[in-house]
Image (cartoon, rainbow, N blue to C red; front, top):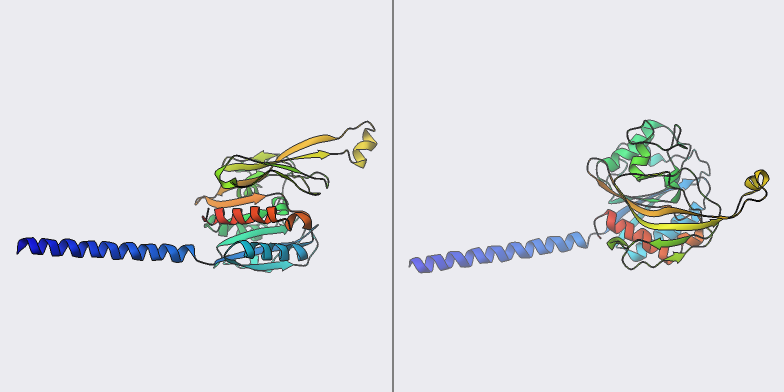
Length: 280
């Protein structure tokens, strides 16, 4: 009798374990099948955002199970702001934010703090091109140290950049890093190579760009014998931001429509989203 009772107990326990395993597996499957909700914020100075938002939305949704909601501003100035950022809960309900704005002269601290607060709280981000030159104030042309009064946006980005080169092809070389598996080196069409003034401690470079930069008119005026030079900078990287070490993926590539519509660029952006949302 005792033996039968023990056997029955063991069988019951095994049944419960099997049921819990199936439930856990089903829960994991549901989580993996979840449709991501992505916010793309784009607009401001110097770029064809009307076209590029369409390229990004279509390209990302073709490659990833997601919905891309576009917050687009038709403003063409470096003072461009976005209504969505006026709310303290602006990022609520989104799995990832794509920052593709060019707002270099927006220096309203409460406005910028609202943007950063969402990412400090753990909302992942992917930053594209001119996002690296947005929301800067103070003497941003000089290296900014951690803890400085104007460090806020650079801490989020992970790299400080102050300027870019001319419109010219960039030779991209990917690091031997698991996140970049499957990507092959390639050369863009005309693009802008953003410089790196500082690379901060929680940043991991993933690709480097090299560009032959011919002397500009003002340089030739000062020095008629000026020669072309090769510039180099990190163009793709990850950063861990804030107390929760929020995942932030960035690339300075993406000035022209030809690049943004390139399947290799769209693959890169999607890989960034996957990593930022812990899908990679």
